[in-house]
Amino acid sequence: MLELRPNCECCNRDLPLDSPDARICSFECTFCAACVAEKLNGVCPNCGGELVARPIRPAAKLANNPPSARRIWKPEGCGHAG
Ligand SMILES: [Zn+2]
Ligand SMILES: [Zn+2]
Image (cartoon, rainbow, N blue to C red; front, side, top):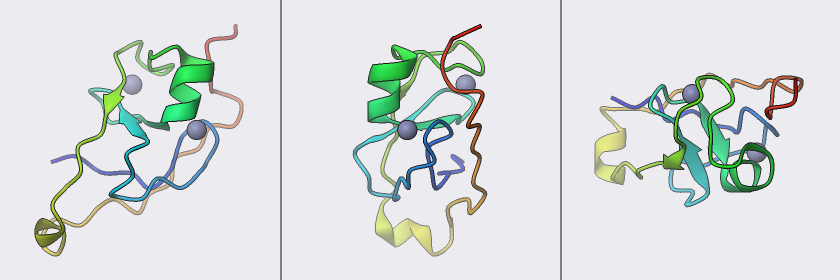
């Protein structure tokens, strides 16, 4: 099951469960669409994998399958510099 993390690792902006701007890699590293397009060029900076639109979990499933509350933010680790 996807963790559905609550924020962008790169800019720490909130990414609600139903946000169409959430992007994830196969390891569930989570970013916003703006960072993916402007800073990451569609590639996860952590694992080098492809970043794709995060599926939206149906509201009826959330009660028994709650999202992660763990915020991951790497203010100095975003992007491919270095
Ligand atoms: Zn971002
Ligand atoms: Zn990744």
